[in-house]
Image (cartoon, helix red, strand yellow):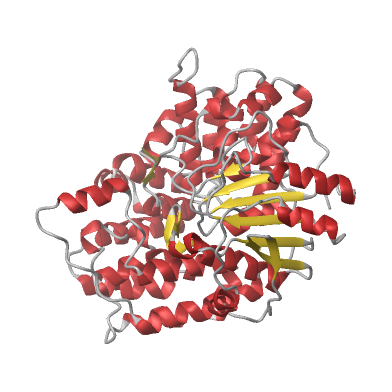
Length: 545
């Protein structure tokens, strides 16, 4: 198995990039709400920054993580770059971080987030700062000026602002100059608005306006027409002709069926899955609706393959759709319970869409990429696993999540051993890789287990002399007193002479595990479940962190 020859600090750095923490524990959820993105949470970055020999390592780790395309929360990459850009130990590292902005922050959302992170880090320093340094301004200018005038026009009209920041704010603070006459038109639109931009252009002879400048004026005029249009059909025509996205649509048109009919035609399948419940709640997916056929046309094998959508995405999407949306947070449940008038129930799920999603769920197993390592996955199939929803994804029960991970591996890999926990240890199960998820659930019969020993899979593999690279234990929760998995994997490594054998403990129904004095770099804990978990496991199995 491949393994990186690095220091503990570099391992912690890569862990943060992939799982948002420097300790080996992944928790799904909103990482902004849970304050993951704070400079004090990444001490490894500050220690590595103090060593000039490690500067290239930090930036290359961020770049490599992005290129490998297994980072499920790219905000970690943006935050890591912002920390490097705002640290005060070495100017050379700051320069390298700012030089990497165009590569890491390609999308407008990520670029705005980078500036937000830099501002927040600046304000939380021991000596808070509000100004923008030369390097920061240079990076911002380079990002804006590297875009063509029309490209920049589309960016600022689609993503006017994010995360409480606007392009207008960033351009003003960085003093970005317009180096070309066409770009001056775009900058006037951003900073002054349509009315003043037109007044400024009236003062100048039209003969001085380039062809691109004329196209920009027509484009901005059309965008303003969309923003203020009250006629649904006319607005939909603008959206279609300009190939606008959901971000362009003004608030008063977001409940228009005409608009959504056009948007669905140009949306990616990933975006359709993300907005499926929203469209359904507006009753656009009733059996007699015209939009049903358009959504069904998008849910096809070609789109699944092109967008490389993992089975976990379809499982979460279909379960949420069948249950009328994502589970409500505690705050939203409280508001709903205290409401004077109960909310009307959403329309029933459309059976054709449910069937199409289940069909693509089964197909998507065929596009999972192999890692070419040996796995052993052991699942607890007791009553709690079958009856309890996963933490942060309660519409999916814990047994379903475990079976999905197992079936993904069976379809993609050549060497996978599947077992279930029993009172006597474990029991291996012969699974046909061509089974559907529902068939596999029936194959793994429920078992009554009093107490689980997480070291049993390693003991069994050592006894049978089986070479396993990655052990995966899927249970409802892990208790500190009875957890002997770390001792089990260490014993297995010694007996089989496999020093890099890995262990993944998934506590599907638990919000957290327990703290340790020291962490084994080849042991990963996962709490709960979401559509990102299988990709996290894949990155860990490939020794990316």
